[in-house]
Amino acid sequence: MMALILVSLLIVAIAVLLLSVRIILQRGGRFPNTHVGGSKAMQARGISCHTSQHKEAQLHRSLAERVAQQD
Image (cartoon, rainbow, N blue to C red):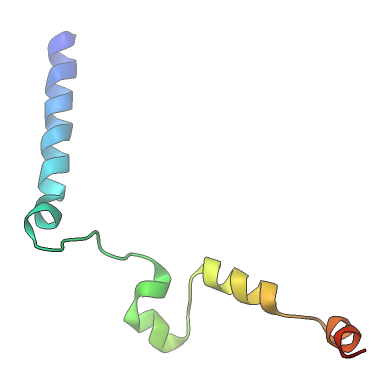
C-alpha cells in the first residue's frame, strides 16, 4: 500500500514537472492566457468573458436612473 502511494506521488510529480518545463525554462515564461477575453479571435468577434460583461452591465443605467440624475 505504501509503495503504491509513493509511486503515485512520483508519477504526479513527474507529470507536473513535464507540464511546467516550458514555463520554468523560458525567460519570462508564463501560463498561457486561456480566458475568452484574451483570445484575439474572440476579441475580433466582439465576444468577451463573463466578468467583463458583468462589469459593463453594472455600469448600465436605466431610463429612470438617467432622468433622476438630470434633476
